Image 1 (cartoon, rainbow, N blue to C red):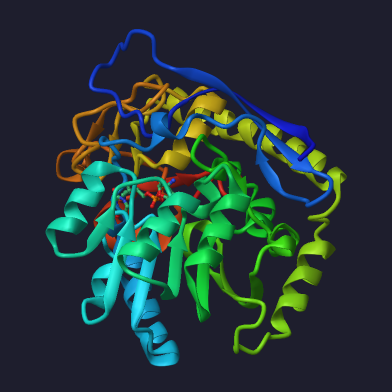
Image 2: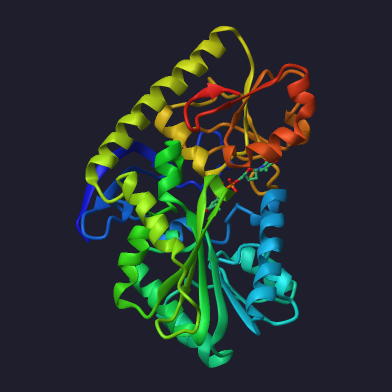
Length: 393
Ligand code: DWN
């Protein structure tokens, strides 16, 4: 793969490295750069960070922390049961089991390299392999359990560096008529929303349907349906079958690829333009923060997301701008944001009368958050977002 760089987001930390100490010694930083591959139109980080630095026994993110996602996983589970009547399901990147626990009546198996998370699902009776997904692991699971009717993977394949091996191993573990469902942030939406915070250490790739279609060329997988989702700032749910599998191929795939091509997803110039928009976004966000700060108003962060780490570190927004972040995730509370060292506290302690503005780190849950924070809004509190352009909501 010949990547050409189009974006430099500066020195960035490991996004999962929520710090116990406000002034850490030797915090690991690297230069986050993003590139484009001419042959496949695949967008990826120029350099990958060793997986073990990111996915370990201290993984903070819990997929079950938002009502939006709990509901989305439940709905998907109901639909899959109705439509495909699977007897077995494997999830790659099973996190805390928020999806798999809906399949207690069939063979449900997780793969989750983060040991603290795998412990949770093993405890509730979901057999979970705490290993990185690869060909060897696929064979081990085939030997111990067998082939699967459905393989599901949300927000995980985009994190696996050896894509070809990951997809080949999925095809390996599927039944003849089995299906694979991939769910990851959409490149089209990232470009439209200028949501450059989809780029961070864990997100090795941001996929388009166009590039996925090229990558699977030599693998026994074929896309047969695509759904657009609002989750995680705009994602694609892509359904794959084996080449001789019995599912009918929908014509919505061609339509989606045409839409992507219309936006120039397969042209390098599109990314140069995107990069210019990002630089502008940084300038405008910083201006907005400065204007608010000059009026002596109190700004907090809402949702210490991995995504927001890119924004804060790229725009150099630290404690001088954001007093603290609130986040419902217990593993993040009492810690400090990576790179920018802003304290993270329990929303119960932080969402009070003194707050004037809240920067939406979790802008992807804007609706859920705004519904929840009626009191804050009613007393004149305002949210700040950088998506699709920096502004006060
Ligand atoms: O791909 C990934 C996604 C799915 O999850 C991972 N690589 C890492 C992680 O990324 P993220 O942190 O950007 O994901 P979320 O799901 O946007 O994070 C939302 C955060 O906001 C959580 O820490 C929970 C928090 N939150 C909150 O404090 N109050 C969320 C809601 C809705 C709330 O009301």
